[in-house]
Length: 270
Image 1 (spheres, one colour):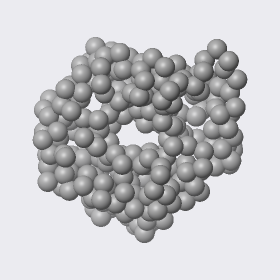
Image 2 (spheres, one colour):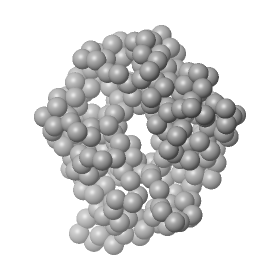
Image 3 (cartoon, one colour):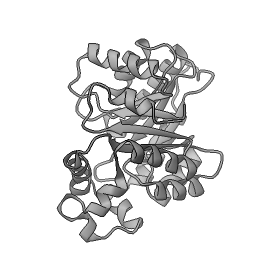
């Protein structure tokens, strides 16, 4: 299955997190992705999820640049790659206060590449490294210094542009938010969080042709509909649209989850 699950685990007990990972694996999803915001350290959380499963790929989506030094990020990536061969992917992103973002990101990735860790050789296979690239320059950097990109809060039109910019040999894992039942308030709340507080998402949406009017008030109906799929058929169609546009993998964030959300989603995807 070229589809995974994306979610935040902030506030979830470890037991509940393990149960979720086991369910996602049992249902046949390819991977589980999680964000690093106000909860556990991303690499510690990845280790807990990997230990709770036997086949599932676990991916940071994303581990924040500002939370750890490059050598620390590289050491953690190598350790998890050695312990769980082929099952860990390291997605990186975030902001560098007071710095030029592309230059700072380039320096950070170079620091990972140049990390001196003689007691911790690079495992085989080396864990895939992705960056949360949205704009053209960030996508160029992902093509140059990483294995690909992990765009978040994007429509399939962005996926097509990202694939063209990355080229055919790079991995493209795209996040897609869905609401399986009629809950427009959940979709609007989700979009509004980013369009009000995240200038990089605002800039990306403007590049895609959305206007200041679309971004006002937490997002127009047109913007919300473009970013969040509503209903089972729309969810299935949106996943297929990303894959058709060039994504290698789509990680689905289910908003307003219910107990059977992931099982319902598994029935919809290829």
